[in-house]
Figure: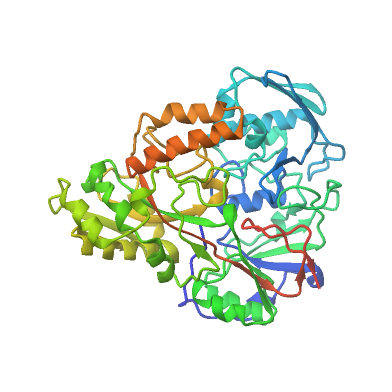
Length: 521
């Protein structure tokens, strides 16, 4: 989720320019990310900010390039049996943990086994696994008990929490507990001595890291670090960060404030990194199927013709450069983009929604719209929905609270009807990692308590499908059910650009901040 922007937060003071003793300022890149990195265990939480930390300090067996292709990262070579049930992986030379120990196949097996317990996609692979065994110090074998067509895609997924490798002694920590120390094998080393919670975190270049020989390509290829340290600052207010960037005290800002984009575009000191396709966010209205008016799918379906994505994007102050309307549930620009079930959404209209509502059993019951007042996109999207609901004939109870309270309220089966939320396309484009529908029929408190029994076998079929064409067909079937039942309604696809000092060179275009390859001039 994007960082919150509080224009009330005032003084920048001289704190921003004060680096800790011993840090070579000329070779230190200072960055402000979406939020403070609180959880350092990369398996423990799906929080995006922890995933960003994971890619800096840890490493993965496979990784995705800019074209969305999965490439080997820690793995040197692999083979698959003709029936696709036996996979053999050999690690590449030169891999070492930050404490100096060699990375072994035992570490990889233990890391995967722990990750299987924390990831929805990893858990599917785990349930399809008959055995995961070490063959020699650098080789391990994955044997499946049933077809699973997404082995490499799973091992190289960007979905959070990611399949990060860690020493076996740390991977032995139950997934319900956080690992006791932060030892990875990635291009940066976490410096506990330099960590000041609430203020800043320092990641130092891993001098022992051996990059792959290929050029850096998004999350794949050679992770060559060209700075001595990455200084990650905690600054709550976006305007303050922008001023610090203009003065040269901050080099990089993960999310530029929407209301400052035009000014930043005109500032020669600052460059903006725009995103397309999987790197964009998609917003959805999540509905409560357990109680209230939206427990009736006929009433939920009114939203399909009510929601005007262009109005939401305009309300956020975004031009066509940074946003687009998109009815594809698995986002536009992804391999699973399709138009199944989107007919009611193509010409949004208050009048059409009002007429559709009259054909339902709706009898004036209040629709409780949760509005997060500390996150820009959820706030604006929910306010616009509340207005359109009223104009279409709904009785609206708009309840304003902070985002943490929204997250707490949504765990209850009553007391809310709908709210706006958004997530990255790298997570939403795959039916198995799409958080909007991923909790279908599980009773999980994060999924709006929806249960469409027809989706469960389709998820299994998607995981087992051997070809992209077959998965695309199944994705269309899934989307048809999602929209037929109006389980969620998209409110737009957009980018929140990163901003950085123009003196930075070779910064990798990525919505997940990446700091290898970049040079500070």
